[in-house]
Length: 395
Ligand SMILES: C[S@@+](CC[C@H](N)C(=O)[O-])C[C@H]1O[C@@H](n2cnc3c(N)ncnc32)[C@H](O)[C@@H]1O
Image 1 (spheres, rainbow, N blue to C red):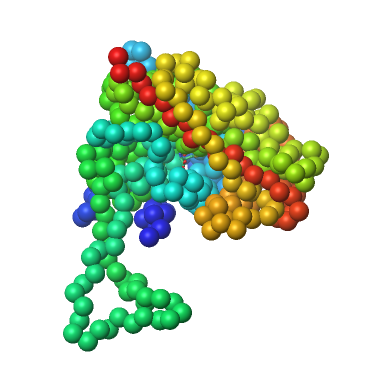
Image 2: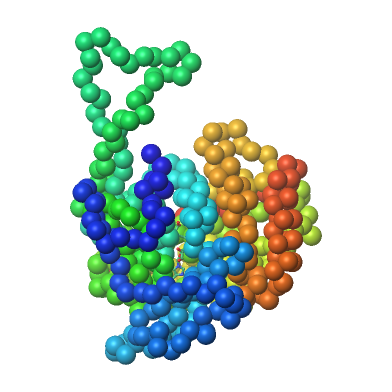
């Protein structure tokens, strides 16, 4: 079953479903700013600002972007880090792109949710920047077909020599906890759109660059995926993860570093793909983030804040050009290409216009060229995936 199908297109409801949990999140307001993209949300009257983190959305070329504004919180010890924007969209098209990336990771890890060698019980799991929440849902539970009904006296099931077993499309599916004792928390700056979630999953609105609300020594596993390029202070984030983990608990990081690596010289240094990535990275740095160095740089950063036994693994996903014959690698490759083709405009518009000051028409031209190059069968590129995990010392 496609996990994405359980996601609602509307705002979350507070009512619990019969076999699932209501989605709860703490207070936030969402404002629309369709009037003037460039003015951002600075124009909102100060009466709308309270001690909470406020999220505001604005649209550009029909895509919806979300910003967050932090204001000084009067509670002691809670920091204020000013105004920060998230440059990828928060809309249904972006959800599809994130689902494709989730599929790439599921295939890369061959169905495993993490690689940390956790042997004891998993009681509390945190997914930082959970997005559509697919990882959090999948780690909370998995789906199995219900046991087949007893065979009828005259068999009604037919076997087709071509199609194999003609399974009943209405077959019931059952949901089972992947880790019987685990309670999962997913945090994000955007409200969850899930209308239903496993009973052992809670979605929480949190800005993970602020002081964490979770108690010390509480998690067995913290998972951070696809956050490269969006975090201004990695050492602080890693330090807060270390504090929130139980002694012996693991932090696991899944991310891609620079896309479009090329080993056979088929990608010209002057290509639009190269320019696109280089310029996006400049925008990330301008807005106080770093993207490219995070994947390879993560093990050293984790060791520096105190993680032990840090392990780093890599894999490659073909992005453009020749596709692998292996079915799994081929699907990974197709999903990667598809999410770039469909997602190129969304992941470019805000960064190039708001941060880098490009003209909208120039961005549209760039995206059109990017799409053309993505489909060039003669350019063989790959994207490098990184899996890095490390343990909080036992004492
Ligand atoms: C590229 S998406 C990845 C989503 C998810 N981890 C996945 O792998 O599917 C990045 C997510 O991080 C969230 N995010 C960005 N900055 C954040 C912050 N400071 N605190 C919490 N979430 C944040 C965004 O809202 C977005 O949902």
